[in-house]
Length: 277
Image 1 (tube, rainbow, N blue to C red):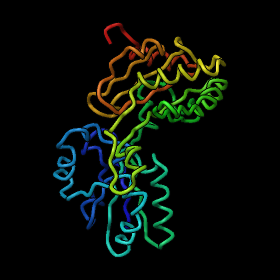
Image 2 (cartoon, rainbow, N blue to C red):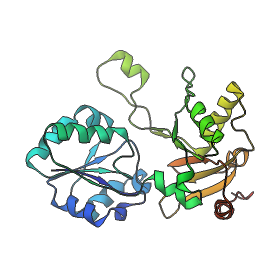
Image 3 (spheres, rainbow, N blue to C red):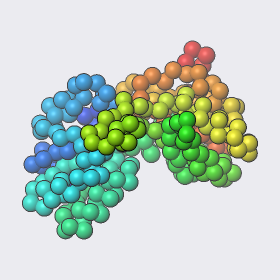
C-alpha cells in the first residue's frame, strides 16, 4: 500500500489521526521536500521534530528523487506499506497526481489522506472561497526570463469580479547554470522563497509592460506569510502599501481582491494595513 498523506500547514501536530495511524504502520516513510515546507521546516531541528512525533525515521525526498526515482518507492509499496508525506494537501502539486497514476498503473493500492492546504486556508482573511477565479503562479524573474502568462488569467478573473490567489515561487535544489553546462556532478543554487514584496514588484512591472489597467498600485490585495502556523501574518491593503510591509520568514502568498461582499469587507477590516506593519 502507498499512503500519500497531507501534513497540513503548521507543524508536526497538524497531521490527521488517520494520517498518523498510516505513518505508524508503514515500513518506510518518505517526505516530499521541494514544493512546500512546514513553517518550522526551515530550522535545523524541523525533521527531527517530525521523526520524534511520528516515531519513525523519515527519508527526505527531493525533486530529483520524486520525479526521477519514484519507481523505486512505488515498487517498495507492492509488498510493504509505504508512506509519502506532503506538506499541505497531497494534490496541491501535480507531481503527486503523477505518483498516483504510476502506482495504480503498476497495480499498487493507493490511499490518500487529505489535509488543509493554502487553497482553503486563505479563507481566514474573509474572502469567500467560491469567489475565487483561476489560481496563478508567480515565478522569479531573471535577466533573460520574465514570463507573464499569469497576466491574462488575472485579467480574466478581474473582469468577472473574482479574487485571484497568487502562489509564489519556491526554488529549492535548483542546479546552477554552470553545473548544467559542464555536466557531471550537479551543484545547486541556495534555496529562494519569493516574498509578497517581490511578487508585487514583478506584477507591477508586467502591468506596466501590457498597460491594460488590469491592476495597479491602488489595487486591494491581501498578503499572507506562514499561513496556518502560530505566527502567521495577514495584511490587507493596496499593492503599494503591501510592498513596504515586512512579512518575515517564508512561505508567502498573495491574493488580488476582486469585487467584495459587505461581509467580506468586514472581515478584511481586521487585517487592514497600518503604518506600523
